[in-house]
Length: 498
Image (cartoon, rainbow, N blue to C red; front, side):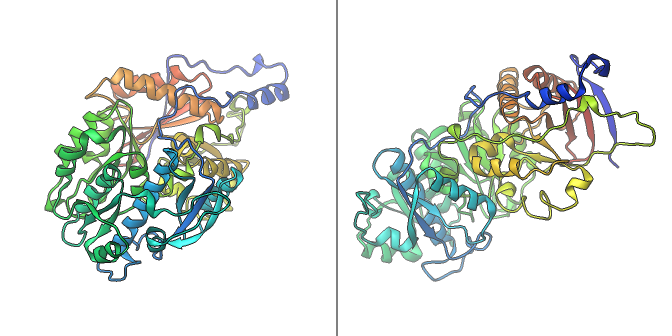
C-alpha cells in the first residue's frame, strides 16, 4: 500500500497568508514568476542547426510495431527495409547539416499521431516544404531533377552500402548502424543486395558476420561521445538520429528479448565510461532488468532518455533552442485553505512522464492527458519537460496548450530517468548533481513548471536527501518535490516541500 509523508527541506519556510496585502495582486504576480527563454547551458540534446529548404516524405509501408518483423520477402517490407529508410534519412539529414544538400528526409507516420502532425506542421511554419511522398526504394535509386534550384536527388549523396544479414546475425543491424555514418553508406541487407548493386551501389563495409564488440573495436574513435543510443537488435528506430549525429549504437541482448543468448553488459559499462560526463543515452532494451542499464547509466553520471519507439528525431528537434515555447498553467498554493472545515485533499500523479516515446505515441489521447474526467479529478501529469522540449518542442508546446485548467504538470524526472541516490556515484557525483539540478531548474523555470518528481532506490537515504537539497538549492521557484520509491518502479511517494 502506498504511504504519504511530509519531509521538510532545509530552506523551506511555511507561508503566512497575512503577509499578503492583496490576494488578487499576489496571485497575478505568481503567474508572472518565470524566466525568459534562453540558453543557460541546460541543453544536452544534439541539435540539427541547418534547415533544409525541402524534405522528402519517405513512405514506410508497415506501421510502428510491425515494421521490424523478420521473415519478410518483399523489398519494401520488414526490418531490412526499415533500416534502409532510417539510414537514408540519417545520411541525408547529416548532408544538410554539412551543407551538401538542401533537402532532408522525414519518415512517414502512418498512425496519424498528434505528435508527428504538429512536428511536421512546425517544419512548414519554418518554411521547410514537403517535396512529396516516395518509398525508400525510389529515393535510393531514382534520378530526380532540381526543383526551384533545389537538388532533389539523394543517391549521389551516398558512397555505397553497408551489408547486413539480420536474419542470421542480429547484431549486424547494430554494426551497420555505426558503419553507415562512418562510411557514408546506406544499409542494405543480403536479401536486397543484388537490387541495389543493379542501381550502381558498391559495398563499402560488410557487417554480416560482425558483432557489436567488433564495431566498438573498429569504430570507437570515429564516433561522437556526447550521446549514445541503446536499442535492441531487432529494431530500427533511432537509427536515423544515431547516423545523423555519428553516434555509437549498442544492444544489451545479443538476440532480441533473450538474455540467455549472451549480453554486452561489460561493453556497455566501458562505453558509458567513454562518454563525456552528463551525456544523454537514448532508447531502451527489452527483456532485461533496469539494473542492467538504467542503473548503470545513472551510476555513470549520464542521462537516460527512454525513447525507444520515437523517430524523426533530427527533424522534430531541429533548431530547438530557438523554438522554446509554452508554459504550464499554475495556481498559487499560498491561497489554498488546507484547513477549511469538511475538506480533505488528495492528489493523483501519473508518474510515467519520463517516457519520450509515450509522449510521442499516444499519451495525449483521451485515455490519459485529455481524458474528460482528468480536470474533475484535478490530476497531476508527469511530463519530461526537459527532454521533450528539446526533442520535440512542437509537441511540448501542444501539451502545454492542451493542459486542462485544473490539472497540474510535474517535471519527471530530474533530467532523464536516473536515480537520485546513485546518480554519478561511479563518476563525480557532486559535479553531476550540480549540472543536472541546475539544468533541470532552467527548464522548469522557463516553462513555469513548479513541481519536480525524482525517483530513488531509497527515498529516505542520506544520498537521496543530498540530491533533493541540490535540486532545491538550484531552483528558487520550486514548490515541491515528489520522491518516488523504486520498487522496482513506483511504490511509495514522499512529498518534500522546497
